[in-house]
Image 1 (cartoon, rainbow, N blue to C red):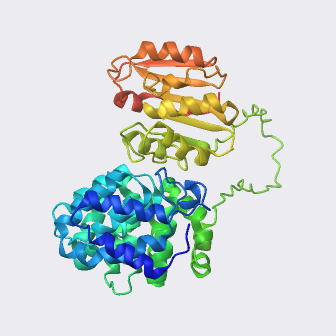
Image 2: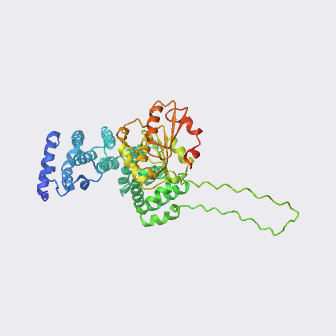
Image 3: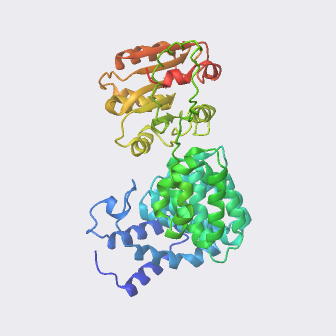
Length: 461
């Protein structure tokens, strides 16, 4: 990469801006500029943008910044052409071109009717963290400043209770508004985010950390009040667990304020002390010895129970909520994306810990099956609810070795999504310690769920 001569770079960027109204010519000259500044010392994509799956020119940020500066005025004055050029840049599919596309969206007036549909569609398409962050911050910059009510309405849509998959988008979009010292309507933001903090899904830990730290910097007292209120009133035991996990990243004064509320609660059971009576009645009949009590079953560690929801479901589904009520402290995370993405999200949750009880429903049953067959020593028991073992990509896992992990499959005779018998045939080959419970129900097992003895199914043998 040649050393960056600012005078030459400004001329190159200015010449590039001359082709603003000619997208094809613009792309041709943009490629030339990006290739001119390729940094060959950065050998891999991971060095440039960790977590990105996009091709990259490995161009220094200063080059993109100069190009953005030259495009700013034209983009703001010509929103229609900005959208057209942004589309071409996005379709190019490189890290740098998609960052430029995100920048152009941020220069378009928030009243433009085609702005939000593009941001919504692109955030659903992209996995590269840097581009996703740009879409949720840079692309919404004018809306955030010029029409804050419209922006907050969008965030409320992202944070809707039934749309857990978009909660991360909502949190990341809010952070620049909270950090803006000119923004004064913080009470509205606290109202919006409090339910998300209370739910505290494990998949949102990094986002919650960024959110809470930013809120504390903006308003320490209000943040402390909100967190204490959530921790003392919530019925969700995972709230304290998640906040305890992320609390090391909090500013020290906030950690001190929450320390007592986040400390794990230990239940101490004291045997009742019987009064000593030194009066002896010699005429009283001799009492018969009481039969020896049966040893109590060892209490199960609910924190080692995890529920894996189905393809179109979330951690807020009916089954997930009922399991969480029956087994307080169990884990019910959210999963998004295709199968491999979900397995990648599952891996850090389970880690290397053992004695997991995995409950998988439908597509979650496929996830639980593959994990158990690959890591049988980590799984205490596997419970599958109408598992989607016929669905791709299971075909690529046909070489899985049979395992002896205790496995229970619950399947409905009226299941019109996952046929019972073909699944049973696969399961009998995979699990050597298998119990099949067939119920008169459909795929969702709505009626059977309330009739089954889950303590017995999940509990010790």
